[in-house]
Image (tube, rainbow, N blue to C red; front, side, top):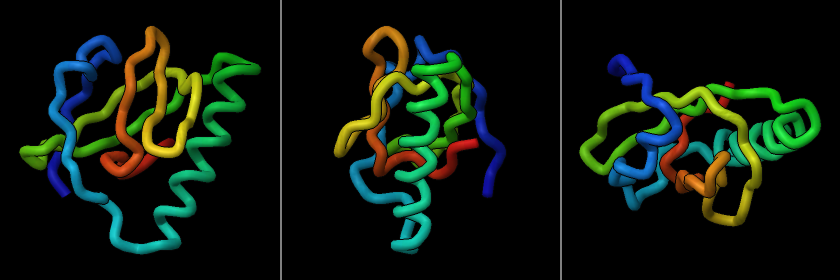
Length: 93
């Protein structure tokens, strides 16, 4: 996989996200959601930040280091109401 571009959370809203699911393995999709929910808990209780890697519509890989405030059915909400579609997220660390 190509090298990711690190961006600030404020830059996320300028990204055009892919409309397709970036993970093909159902187990990886399940694990991603579990990790996002854990990140939400850690973010809300301890203000712990995580590194989120995601793909844009033009297949560029981006990485943002931030706190996850909420996990919905389709989007992750970061501080300031910034959202990332879950289907675009490759990895959460």
